Length: 216
Image: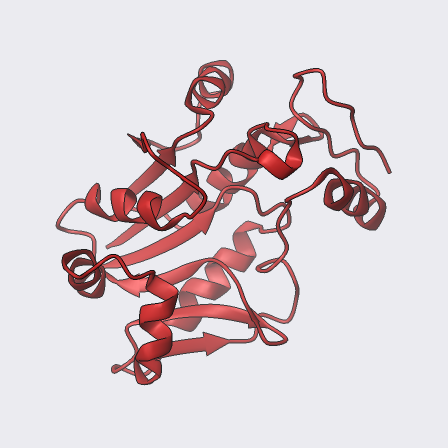
């Protein structure tokens, strides 16, 4: 069974201190768009890990409910690294989950077909490969997929990041070329948001907190 872990605990400090997953396009937040894509996979469980902007994201979810059931987890000390949020998200998965898909909530271009192809690529991996991700050029991206038994092993170890662990165990890593940059493009700064608006011709906008809106 598939479980999804969506990481949305970041501070968004370089974006002006806003919840990046609440950036909107055509009236939809990045979070809503991503959750609809996840829904297409029919996951047994979807864990959403919140942190710095928990209240704002809760409010957004009340206004526009998620398209699938969510297990909400609050990281009280998210820091600058997603590692602690990932650990909390993995801990929250039910025992029957066999494959885990880890996603970032601020990737604007991922759509359902991207996630479906990623899951298929992981399902077609060698049996010795227990973790995998897409690579565009030489840059690794998301979603990261891993076997639940590996997740449990990693949680029992010291707090080394999952990617460093994988790089120390390359024989267990599956990487595939998705053929586009959807998996590696995220949003860190207002300049990146403006470039996205120019590239896509769509009116991507910051959350309504007094920040300026970026149009194409």
